[in-house]
Length: 421
Ligand SMILES: C[S@@+](CC[C@H](N)C(=O)[O-])C[C@H]1O[C@@H](n2cnc3c(N)ncnc32)[C@H](O)[C@@H]1O
Figure 1 (cartoon, protein in one colour):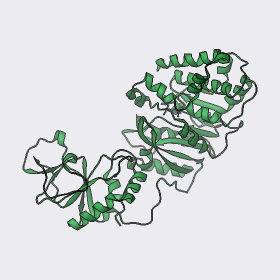
Figure 2 (figure 1 turned 30 degrees about the vertical axis):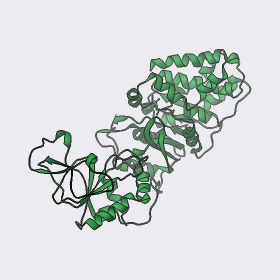
Figure 3 (figure 1 turned 60 degrees about the vertical axis):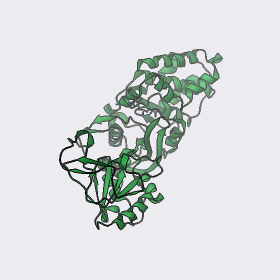
Figure 4 (figure 1 turned 30 degrees about the horizontal axis):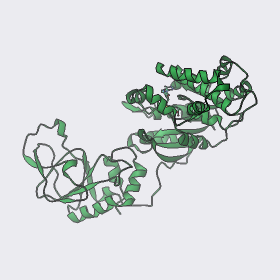
């Protein structure tokens, strides 16, 4: 992270020579779409993933601030507990007025804006960018850099998870895009053992520790909204936040993760948050079909035993009915009696069809690879397979899957829930 000190030097020289500063460069450092790109020049994608440092662009930052259901004023105390280089705090500052003098402006902003991050270079960048933002908006430079920086005593290096209700009791607004990394489960309350998404852990911690009536706006990974592992997280959040959930789609062009915006007011609540679009009552696929993952795991299967027709994503052209398969394979595991439908597990909201399917209508039972999901009609008829293919191809199924599951693969659970009738 130390490489970022170079960038901070640029920010500091922009302050020192503000009167002669290159306005294009100034605008660039304040451009919320630019900071993510700057970070990518210094860090590999793996490093960015590990610390979860993906900075929020302009459009999403504006949406997140708009989502705060009480206005930000000089009486507010606004916290971004994982503030990175300050994008969300800069967008919040744009709701605050400025005074003639820089020092006076920063005194007021410093009482409102609070932020934490693990990295000193990010905290320094946040403060510097807020100072430059105030100058860019017209406040007159009337103090030294040290004086300007010292106004932001509430923006500091801190582990967001170390703060509890006593230290957070004055916060009126919390805005966040927490890291989406893999953390060890806290193993308290409803958290089970294993690795979990850090964004869920951070939000849970802040729901427990922020004061009642605090308003929240959080950019979160879609897995928290749609993953079956996070049902208890959703239920806890619903019980403690009078909130609203908006599907946003991909975080930005370079970051292949879908996000949603959760906004609301902290308060014990009996109202459920609508995590998904509500549908009229319907009959799901599971009523007429058995659904499972293909049992053959190709890379570790010893290829021993009787030989069967073998299907995997590459030899199953979509929307076709196959009476014969081009490959066979020896297999001792569970084979599937035809007719049945297979769909590819890999599936993205950018695909034309989320559930690309093929009917398998061979004479013999088939070895099915585990990158396919098997959907076998309880009636054992090809007629039901054909009906299902139509359903899977329909825009309604695409809409359903895009609402329920925006991550890049389908699960047995979600396929079972697809509306069949
Ligand atoms: C996804 S970035 C968001 C930054 C900023 N809020 C934005 O929207 O541009 C998450 C930030 O959280 C920081 N972070 C990760 N773990 C943290 C922790 N335990 N406490 C505080 N900050 C943390 C990372 O360094 C990173 O800057």
